[in-house]
Length: 242
Image 1 (spheres, rainbow, N blue to C red):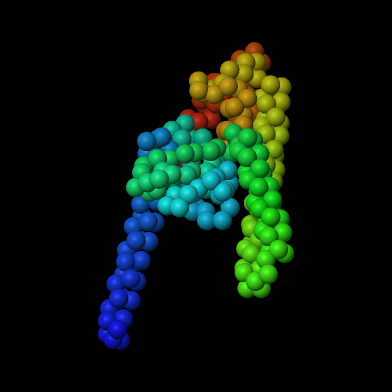
Image 2 (cartoon, rainbow, N blue to C red):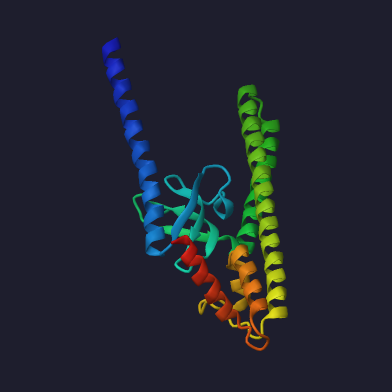
């Protein structure tokens, strides 16, 4: 094959790769944005994850993407979670989306730890297999692959444990807010009909909750209603932002 023909083939291959990856990333972002629009979320921050993918570590298939997201709903409340874009078979040709929120990841974290343990077991099997193989090159390949799997498994376990610590810290902070509000308010009916009082204290922004407690303390005794204080704070906040 002539140098000219090789150059043409190389240009075609590179052009194809550029077009494919350009489409891949645009399509991935589009699936995420369409999901947010359908769910009436505003995306505050999104980050495409390749290595540690939260509860989807070890589950995402080729052609799927995982985002770490922070979104704001129609009530102004912010949530953190993981979004898996694309289907198992069709990849990003599908609009399928799966979401795992941080506040509901206890089971997901356990599943992530189980997958990491499976990877560690696989490392041991690879090491044992390498000791039985006589071919030196193949043995080095197996050992190298096992070491890579081991590092990845340890990294996953570290990230999962760190995620669990953040979740535990969030829940402890929610307990503090519940105690503060109950010590001041005469009624603790949740301002959001879709959330219980406990969920409201866990999901609402700390700054808003602090202002709500201050507003409750200003109200006359016997008229300190959580719902009313929250309405005053959100009304005041919306005025300052416009």
